[in-house]
Image (cartoon, rainbow, N blue to C red; front, top):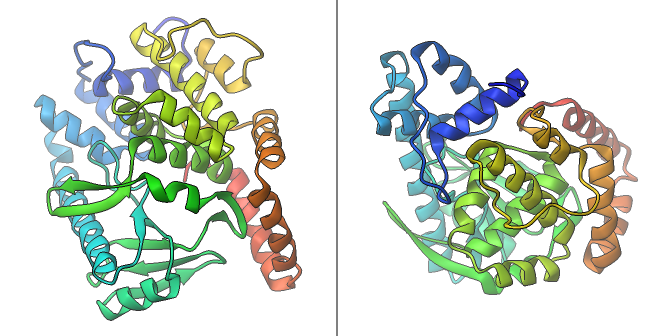
Amino acid sequence: MFGLDNAMDVAVRLLRIFGSPYVRVEPFIPGVDEVEELYGYACKNRMGFYFLYTLERLGVLPEMLRGEYERGKLRYYRILEVMVEVSECLDSEGIEHAVYKSLRPYPSTTVDIDVIIFDDYERAYVTLRREGYRLWGFGPETITLVDPSRSVGVDLYREVAISRVIYLDKWKLRKYRREVKVSSGRVVSLTPEADIVAVVAHSTMKEQMFTLADYYTILYHLKNSEMNTLCKLAGELCVEGSLHFVLLLMSVLHQRVYGKPLIASNVRGPLYDEVRGVLGGRLKFPVKLGLKTMTRIMVGKLLMDGRTRSSIVSQTLYLMRRSYLRFFISQLIDHMVRETY
């Protein structure tokens, strides 16, 4: 496609296969010789199964990927079963919780199921261990378990944090919980507005990277969101900078792919480098946030969020242990050089 570099061209073709809830357009049907490249790009953006699912729904799934699709489908339904099991188990013990970021508004085989525990963190761990879940790992504010079949990981969050730095106040998310019906039962999750805020904060602050999976999660949630509620919640959680960046990036990408922006207004003010990349047709997904963008987002967060500032003290004390500092530095280096997560 004229005016696009190769990486951007692949992203545009991929998004035209998936389509958008905001426009009616015939899906792009890839040739057999294109599928391998597009599948690799989708996997890198954490949408491998959704790509295969979409090709199957369009009736163009190549036989060479049929086995991969069937394995992905089994995993997808197992993930939903584990979500229901965990939610019902915690509910039965009266433990307040919410699955967040993991229950996508499209078929997805997430790496782990993320669960915020609002109270009784230790009891939540003991309860799941009693049900056959095994300890898989832990961090300063998280415990990772694996389900009895050892196929699905479950992360329990005492705080939504990067190491010990809290970047989302869980107590402000508490009133935005809801029950969601899935094929295997019901899951306590977050409202679309709260899940958007969680995904936006996670991608910009923790991962410092924006995938097409994040794009589609937010795109579909926006359809069922109240913008006033979304903006109010972003303000309460001090993530307006992150939300502004993500919605602007998504809007120009949507215009590049479908000819219609998500935000019905002209883009004004200083642009982020990443947004310029989309406008210029030269951007590779996942997008790694540049230093200027990260500085702009984090300075705003630290100025506005007292809980984040306070938790930096805990992080400093935590890193005074030499073994923790070494591990933190090695993780930070890996974080900076990776191409996806």
